[in-house]
Structures are given as structure tokens and as C-alpha cells.
Image 1 (cartoon, rainbow, N blue to C red):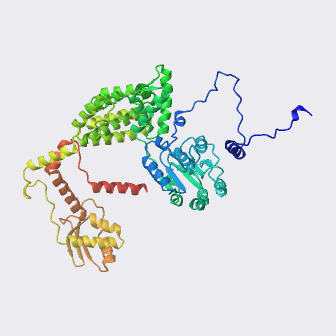
Image 2 (cartoon, rainbow, N blue to C red):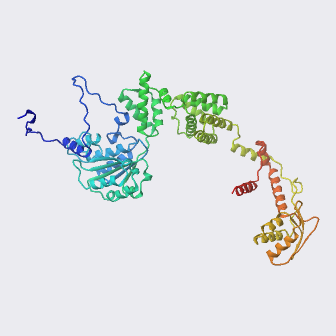
Image 3 (cartoon, helix red, strand yellow):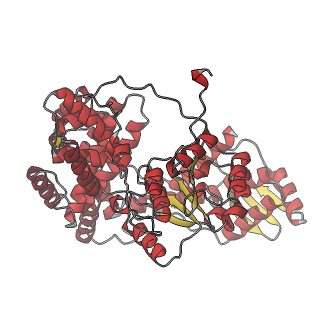
Amino acid sequence: MDDSRKPIDDETEAPSAADLEAAGQESMFGAPVPTPAPPASVSDAPAQPYRVLARKYRPQTFSQLLGQDAMVQTLANAIKRERLAHAFLMTGVRGVGKTSTARLIAKALNCIGPDEQGGPTIDPCGQCEPCVAIAEGRHIDVIEMDAASHTGVDDVREIIEAVRYASVSARYKIYIIDEVHMLSRNAFNALLKTLEEPPPHVKFLFATTEADKLPVTVLSRCQRFDLRRISAELLAEHFARICEAEGVSAEAEGLAMIAAAAEGSARDGLSILDQAIAHADLGGAGTVSADQIREMLGLADKSVQRHLFAALLGGDGGALLDLVDHQFALGVEPLALMRSAMELTHRITVAQLGKGEGDGISAEERALIGEWAASLTPGQLHRLWQLLLKGHDEVRGAPDPLVTAKMALLRVQHAGDLPDPGKLVKKLEELASRAPAAATPGETAVAEPEPAAPTAADWAALVHTVEQSGQLRISQIMHDWVRIADLGHEELTYALAPGYPGDPTAELRDALLRATGARWQVSRIEGEAQPSLREAAEAARDASRAAVLADPMVEAALGAFPGAELLDEEKEQRVAGAGKNWRQ
């Protein structure tokens, strides 16, 4: 017999649980790609590929989760009391641990302990086969699905068909669906029935950054956990521990900068820290310094921020522009300069309330913040904030951010020369109290309008009647140009205001006939008569304007603001309305 065709030995070892699980993985996902064997060497161990910090230090226990104590306590109580929901929804901003929490829940529910006799626990051992397999992402009963790439009904149908079968080796079959808000509407509808009444051996774990996009019918079927942003203090402490574990020295100020730039996201912060460590290594010293991080992130130097803020308050425009140019040359974006000024304004305002004494990084910064908090009033700080906020929005949308930032900062600087509104009101009140008594009507320099004739009200009502009859042009003539000399029963004697061309007597007679149904005697005279309705309204408006200008408080206000004018709001609105109608 050929030596190459020898019979197989009957005494083969029985496959282990790990072999069975690997076979199941191979049947579902295909055979793994074989890796070339390392060169035969006794002394040299195979080199492990580098893992980024965000993956290397992913939480493996609930105690390693940052800032999510309320959720951990709720889950611990639910496990102890055996009140586990069938579906959990983790939501929050990026990098706060949504997917990590889902995997930890899967480990907590399927952990069997080192002795393989344990049950669900909030402190999984991390040593048993289910814990190790889930941590490595290869457990056959813990299925992770990215809803961003599996959005359709067919993908959900596979889940619906698979939930009917019991788990292979674990206590629960768990489906982790990340970015679940990306599922289509039909996919959500197909999942509803299974999600509401799943088999007892199935648990659903959803993770999303946009819970508001989920249908209410899905939200009502899940136990929801809103993961909070991680505070900058917790992140800085976490980064310090990681640097110690990695054997890297880092300045506390630099780690605080990274924590602030992370905006509550542990993953973002670890990515920045990874880059900072590489940047420090290239520098040769191997220390993560604040200056290197500031340069890497394009942040303004804290000392330069204080100098810029001092120039802003001191009115030194030349020094202000020099500082802006210097920071721009170093790579600091104009938007970052505006944001740093806003941040400093906020910290000073908080320090005034006694809640920000230790907010400064250095003793010098804390001393300056305290000094500004004592010298600036709350009104000045709020006005400064509004001006900086407006400038920030302008810089963000400007074609030339640098020039816009300079102009915005100069505007903030020059706004300090304007009088404070509160002090101005007090000054006006003092001037009004010291002003002489108002002149009597006989002594006033403003001429009072002539009293309206007894028939003026009747004439206005008659003009309104003509207008309501649809004769708009004649009613306008009656309002603007007709001066009443005598108005009796179906008799009208009038004079025309200067400037009207022609004689409207016949038109008036016809308009009154159509409006009242009676034939009027209409005659025109040359001589004095009562002012027209338009002239009377203009005279009353002029008298009112003169009375306002003669008021002591208005005189004081016009004196404090040279060049200010008193505008007629109604007139401006009429002009604006006329322009709009003309454009239409």
C-alpha cells in the first residue's frame, strides 16, 4: 500500500468546547484566512500588532466605566432581583461607552464563573470561556450587527428566524445592534413583534447616538439608559492612569487640555492622547507637554489668552492686533481665539458667583480671574459675552476669518467707551429731577393746533361713509384737500387746500349722492376754513413731537448721544409697507 494513503488512527481525541465553537464560527462566516507561520526561532517571540489606546483600554468590567454610576447601579439591582428586561437601549454622544456597555451586559448575563457554576452577575469574572469569547468578539451566541450596513427587512428577517432556536453554549442568545437608528422603517416594523415578545433565551441590546430617530413603538419596548458625557476631571484622571500604565510621563496641564478637547468622549480623548504620545516621542524628550499639545491642537496659549483679554479690556488696539497676528502665525485659528475669549469671560462670570475659584490651571491664572471678577460688573460681563458671541458667529461664516476676528475684537474693545445703560438711566432720572417745572400752556413755545370745528367729527364720519361705499379716490380727496367752512343738513360749503389742481365740486356732489342717497348742495368758496383732516393730523403729530423733544429726559439723552434722532415709528412702518407693496 502507498505510504501516502495510510488509514486514520481510530484513537483521536474528542473535540473540545473551543473546537466546537470555532467550527460553528467557520460554518457561519467561513474559514479564517490562514496566517503565514513565523520563522522558526526559539528566542524571538512573534511581534504583536499595535492596538490604539481606545481599543487597548476598552472597559472590561462595569467598574471601569467612567461616569455611568446610575446605570451600573440599576443593572446590578436588576440582576440581583432577577428583573432583567428583554431589550436594552443605550444612547448618548460618541465615545461614552454604549457598545462597551452592551458587551459588558452580554458578559454579565452569560458569565459562568471560574468554576463554571456561576450565574448572571454585575461583576463578570473575565476568565470563563463565555467572558473570554465575548471580549474577543468570537462568541457564537453573541451576535453584533452594524445597522448602518444592514438596514433592510432581509437583515431583520434573519434575526427573526434565528431567535426561535436556543443558544448553542451560552445562557442567553444576545443580539447587539449598533447604530440602530439607521434601520429602515420597514425593518423596524418587522422587528416590533419579536422585540415585544421575544423567547426567554433572547436579549436585545441596542446602541445609538440619535435616539430621537427611533420610532416610539421601539422606544416603548426597551429599557433605556442615557449615558452621560464624561466630565473633564474624570477624563484627565483616566488619561493619567493610562500614561502611567504605558510608561509615558505627561504634564497635568496637557492632560487637562486633552480632556477639554475630548468634549466628554473617552474615545476622542484617547485618540488625541495617542497622537500626543507619538508627537512627544518625535520630540525626543518622551514627555507629553502642554506646549506640544497646544501646538498639536492649534489652541491659544493660556498666557496669550490672558494678555489678549487684558488688551481687550484696557483699550489697547495696537497690542490687541499684534497678539492676534502672532497667534495666527503660530497656527491658532481665529475662531479658536474668539472661543478662548468667550471661555475666559464665562469663567470670570462663574468666579463672581463663588463657584470657579479653582478653575484656573495655574496660580497666576486664578489670581487674574479673581481680579477681573472683582473689577468687572455682571452687566459688563454679560454685554462682553453677547458681543463676543456675535463676533464668533461672524467669524465662523466669514470669507476672511482673520480680518473678521480683528474687526469683531476691535468692536468689543470700542464698546467699552459707550455708557452703561443702567448708569445712563440713573443719570437721566437725576437730570429730570433737577429740571425746572414744565411751562404752562400759555407759556409754551409750541403752538397748539387750532381747535377742531364742531362739525369735524361729522365730516370725518361722512368721509368714512364715502370710503365704505367704494369711492376710494374721492374719499382721499375729501380727507387730504377739502377744508370745511360749513357743514349742514345735506349742505356742504368748503375751500380747497393749496396745491390741488381743478375743481372737485361735481365729483363731491355725485359721491355724496351715491354714499348717502340724498342730493347735497355743494359749494366752493375762496377764503379761510377749517384745516383738512390731513392737515389737522399733521399739526397734531408735530405738536406731539415738539412736546417729546422738550421733555428733559429726552434732551439729556440727545445730549449724551450726539447725532441721535427721534424717529416716527409709524411713518417708518408706512414707508416700509409701501416699498414692500411696490416690489410685489
